[in-house]
Length: 290
Image 1 (cartoon, rainbow, N blue to C red):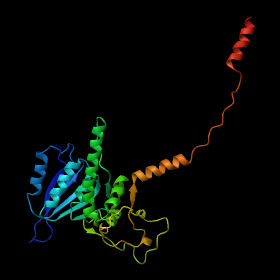
Image 2 (image 1 turned 90 degrees about the vertical axis):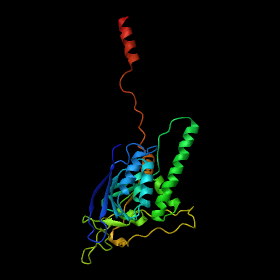
Image 3 (image 1 turned 180 degrees about the vertical axis):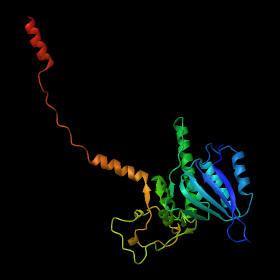
């Protein structure tokens, strides 16, 4: 199996009395082969993770992959005795987003993305086999919802809708919804600028600035016992146009299809035949022959 993780040399954290920071890079597809029924690869990852006890910083850039591997890595990171920080410096999509939820602190760069969606699989067989596959996917989704809910504090109904829509979030939107905690700048220091606009700067025009996240739809089936969403650092005021960007693929596809079906091209007018018919020409030729 191709290794998708790599341990780098420890980084000194500036405190000579503290343990050095251990750096773990997870890059690319998570397990090009499934960890299901694999006892060796997970054991190697666990052995390397538990080889030290200092703080762990994960640099994460992955489009996702095997959900079984992601679940095992998530559990291993939760059980790790030291603090774990996940820095998303590219993309954390699908199963990779589950791994990020195990970190006590999740930081994202201004250009990194986080994506959540429903699990998928391939199934072949009769209706009973397909029904088993659908039931399995529902169970996997419930398990993933557990990780998202523990991190964000959002209701399961809201999180389920976000997964149904295949939701993409930039750093600020992820922080707003509780999937991330900090904004990671080019200096590698996790910070969040609560007031990026200087007082003497001119107010941006109405068409400038970042896109505000779409308002959340109320959860009609939200449980009363759900705790409020986890609040990250304070965000700039709306007039500064510093909100996050949320993109739902399925919603955009539905809007595009609706636009295409609503604005149908005008029907073509029937074209009247021009010239003479072939049968008339044939008749004239026949008459001349006689």
